[in-house]
Image (cartoon, rainbow, N blue to C red; front, side, top):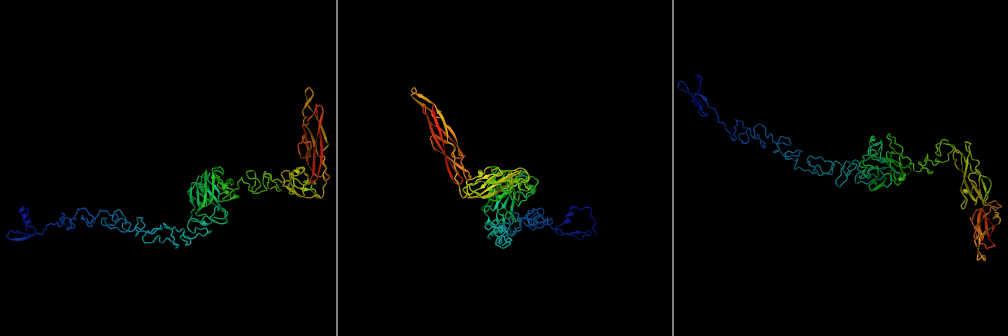
Length: 639
């Protein structure tokens, strides 16, 4: 029968129902019989590992007291807090899911174990902090990957030299050519740096191979130092490669380094500058842009060097001797390009022409320099500074022959005039020594029909002749005369001037030795007399007298009365032949002289006469001579 529902349950009944754990509950029916109504299935909870949490309470491992819900996670590879995660929240530096405390360092470029070191204990041959197992070989002279080889793969041409070199072996400067390496021999003249020392053809460089010919050290149109540059000239007959040369000055040193070859042909120019941008450097086309040096505006010394060979040096001195321009270059005169001539400041000047840029700076980068105005280039005795209007033509200069072309201003007066024509001639016939002949310039004329003037000169005479231009009777006459003194050729030059000077014309006269000669006849002139008085003072009441000497008395002596039957010109020599105590002459040569008589004494009351004889010797140009004497008597009377 079904048991009625109980309105309440007493404690006794509860105990009855509960009974003993694990047992079976018997219920007494109302008929007095027992029946088994409920089965006791309760099991007592067990905490096997004694961690205070049973399995029923969530202990996921009741055999491990370190594992239970709520426990702190430990670095042991176990889910200590039974949340289904292992070692969560613990450091994992490499992020591989394994905490650092359990992780093992592997060669992966990561700090696997979180000790602050990467790939420790793995080999690092080059000591750069990267383990060999991760390293890639680079060209640095070191075994980066620890395989026992250095810079493998960096000797492309197989010549035994790598692109980077080592501490003891230089680098290969061209790893695409096995003939170019630090151990190769330099091939002179090929323009290549065969031995990788930074200089091409170093064995061929000599002092003076390059000459510094132009310097822009103080630009005006652009900012210093961007506009600085200088020019060099190849003085040799071979092409020169400048790679590897050194440029040095007071500010420092720089080397010419370029991936391309920088060469200059014989007679060619190279321009080196500090800035390759035309907008910054004044529109200069530069062959090489240097760095590390700056050209001083004051005093400086600029050198080009190949190894230990100084090729050229130029020094400037703030205007003391060298030019000192602003906005213009110092240029070496184009007629003297050399490394010796550019040491002479007189071969330098300031450029006056612009190179085409509208900024107004002057110079000629990479091109022929101007002619320096202070140098006489054509050898005509004039420079541009002294008025030469064409210093390349020796026939054009101030005062030059104007020529016969109205298109040329030969004398630099600004007018291309037609000059008169000079014609120098001589009277025909045989001309003998000591016989005068006549020069003839009457054939000269001015095309304009104007009057002309004459100017004769003797330009050459036989050796030993004493004649000069002064022996032409009148050099400004159309037809002067001349007496030759020796046989041989005499050359005369004639210049006539009308609207302009003519070109000189010349005539040569051949003189023959005269076959005979008549001696000249000397004539010293007529004898002369003179007198004077001397003052006498009485002594001892007139018993005696003390007299003075007479005063000086002068006489003109003239030998122009001398004659020569041949009409020769003559020379004269004068000499006092007697009475030299009292007489002296003013000149021993010439056609006349003056005799002075002095010191003649007197006695009172008598007269004292003294005679002075003077000889004159006339010599014709053939050497014939004649002598005449003039007597001059002077009487001194005491009074």
